[in-house]
Length: 522
Length: 76
Image (cartoon, rainbow over all chains, first blue to last red; front, side):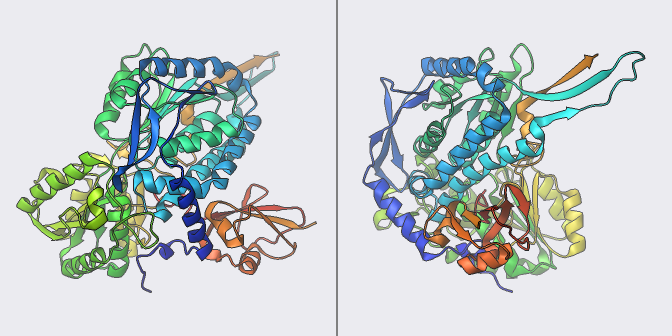
């Protein structure tokens, strides 16, 4: 069986989907440049300073005018969340999930408009944009489903053998209080509203700060939560720079727990700040990856190439799960590399709102400059097989377009074998055997996702040995990417994550609650 | 009574962008999907009255079926 690298590998949309997307895109484009406030205590709040949100497709286009929140807005949002906590935490969980499910329905209803905004703001292709928005709704629903399945996490424990008394013991999971969510640019829907949903259904109140590059689409989804009827102050949305607003939000006195998704450096900074608090507070960190695909001499090479190219270059390599390293057994190295180059060269790059386009631009000027610097460095250390240049023909000159790049023959001692570039650059190496491959696969600080292509016995050994939170074997839909809620709960080991429990899985919601044992003697 | 079918997210585009549609009871989920023109292989999750069921589940009067697409979230 052969697999084509098209959306149809996972989802074959009917023509109506593209018609709906095109109609929504036209509608969204007709109202660009609108100003959006912060949402604090149920009110729209405007600040003196603003910032312009541009599209990476064409930096001359302003998508929205956003508020430049600072210390005051951070304090106001945290205070609103604090005031709302007693009532929200005592609202029966069944009522909380009704509201959150309603928010998910509103996201569904507005899917195409939010998806079109996502494509413009993040530079994601249309199917990945729609997928991210859909995932946000799915993650809200999944948290509701888990709360229901676990009956609100109230568990009857054993009865003490106390002579002359009757003892009843209950384990009750209760919310911490005010929960801070700081989300990244690459999945502004799923990675904002997955944690927000988990925090809300478990009874916490929330302050959400999106990435500076993606405030608009995050705000459009915030509107769904507001319109679903969440009480004032239960969910607050603030925008502004990380070094001012973000830093002001990391306060021991006002925050009871936090979820951060983003880079290792920023995440570890927050982790250190939180460790200075008077008592330990929960912090869920989802950080980067340096995700390997290991290809055995027994692999189905067509399947491996399809999965690797999809994972290497989906969202321009800017997924934490992107396949940035490929380790290939020597006997199949030449054949696989040739197929990878062939498939990469066929990828369509351009305006990601257009139907045939697979790769859009990278997120901002810094990423664009980083790409050029890494390419220079890798070109000196090894051989660039394809790509290796920014694209500036015609309309592409106005955006941050980078060619998908495959590099080989870079010595394993090179720093970029271990450093997350977060760009459409994938490094390939020949290994003598699978033992050597696994040594390199695990020889990095990260441990988020990993992929393997080989026979059944080899797969078992791979699962046993690999140090990563999400692992795939023989998957054409993505070597290291393509998780979805309820199926592949998402989280990392080592430098990739702090909790050891994956989002969208069985063990995720309890991270947002602390346990209280209630012993009653009658 | 009939069975209410509610495709979520992008799956709505298979029923003309509507939020829901009604079908007769007695058939399997798979048969209903085929009749509605939704390829069964793109449906990742079937929830009948919010309980996960297989595509071979036989639908009964009054039930509500939610359908989630395989792409729904399959992007990370």
